[in-house]
Every structure is written in structure tokens, then in C-alpha cells.
Image 1 (spheres, rainbow, N blue to C red):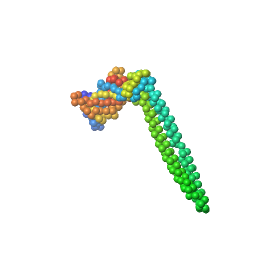
Image 2 (image 1 turned 180 degrees about the vertical axis):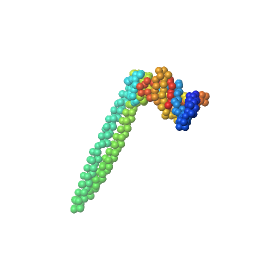
Image 3 (image 1 turned 90 degrees about the vertical axis):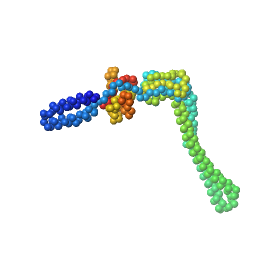
Image 4 (image 1 turned 45 degrees about the vertical axis):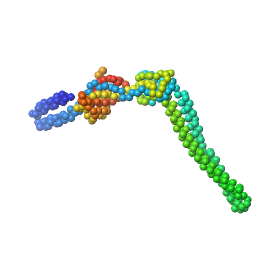
Length: 305
């Protein structure tokens, strides 16, 4: 790059000497070329040979529960979407537990929604209060028509009816809490059942199957290996003299050594550390690979624009 800059400046100098006999306006234009030459040189592309293509995401999908592999839904080479089910461990018992939890939730929901007990208690209270009012009216006309004992019984009936209303309201509040509790239990049972499925944490390609139908697995056992290919990382090293943090975000092109295919991407990282031995800096770029034409492990020239 330094040789290129020197040769470019030499060419500009020769051209200025050729412009010497020209008019003043032409000499001014030539001088302008000298001023813009550094900017043109700064805009030159940076080429880094030996760039290596690597994976960004790869995972050995683990088992989360113990049991027998009931169904293997994929094979090596299959492309899968994020959250898709890859493998099913036998979940007979947790599914029964989930069904029971959902049934209990339905019962609790009906009990919480019912206000029959509250309405019955309120109706009983109205009746008791009516009888007490009639007794008061009768005693005003003729005191001995309702004995004190009967009158106390009527008052007690009113008090009991009021307490019955409060209890019915309290019972309904408790039923609503029971419904909420059953909802949590049902959700927990569903999550427990889901743990018997191995799902893809991201969209990718299955490259290795460790467990197959009928195999016994324990929590933590590797089931499948999944890699992401639609976006890859390119790692290269750049001379510290030209490695600047301002390069981050610049467009890049990766040209493969084998075949010469080109892929577009963006520079995402310029390391702040300089290797004390070779005075080089590590840089990373991300390349979009929607057609999966670019393979991890490939090498090529990374051009920063």
C-alpha cells in the first residue's frame, strides 16, 4: 500500500510539471489535484489475504430430562427453523400430569366464576331482614304479640345471614385464588412436558445425530449438533498501522481463494489489542449467506471498502 501511495504521488508530481506552461487557471486546477490526492489515497481499499471463515452459532443440543428417545424427527443435513422440534423423548407420564392439571384448572375456573353461593346468601339476608322488620312493626302495635325470645331469634337470623354473605364472598375470593394457583400448576406441567422435546435454539443445519430412536438419555447428554450457516464470521489479521476502530461498520467483500466467488458483508470488530510480536490486529466481519454457498473453513481475501 505504501508503494502504491508513493507511485501515485510521483505521477501527480509529473503531471504538475507538465502543467507548468499552462495558464493560471489550469495551474490552479492542477494544484487542486495535489490537495485531494491524500483523500483519494485514504479511500483506497484494504485487502487482507488469508481470511478464515468461521461459524457464529453452533450447539450440541442437550437432553433436559431422562428417558427413551421416542422419535427422531431430523437427520444429518436437514435445515431446520428456530424452535422446531428435533427429537422427542417419551413423555407419557408428564403428559398425563399435564392433562390432570388442565382439568383441575377448568374445575377451579368454573368454581371461581360461580356466584350462586353469594346470591343465595344475599337472598337469605333479605328474607331475614324482612321478617325482623315485620316483627318490629307488630311489636309497635302490640308489644306482646312477638315474645322477646322470638324477637331475639329473628335478630340472630339476620346476623347469621349477614355473616353467611361475608363467608360466601370470602369463599369466592379463595376460589379465584385457587383458579390462579391451578393455572400456574398447569403452566408448570406444560413446561415440564416441553422439557422432553429437543428444539432448535436457532435456524440452522443438523450436522450430527448422537442419539437415535430407542436410546436411553440422561439430562445433559448430547442429542444432536446444529450449526448456523445463513450468517458466518470471517476472521483476519490487519497491520496495526492501518487498523482503526473507525473501520467498524465498513462494507467488506470476501473473495474465496478457491473458485473466486465473492460474498458481501460488514466489518463488525477491530480489536484494540496489538500483537507485540507481529504488530497485527485481529478483525472480524459478518457475511450474509442465505443460499448457504459459503462454507465454514474456507479461506479468501477480505477487502474493506
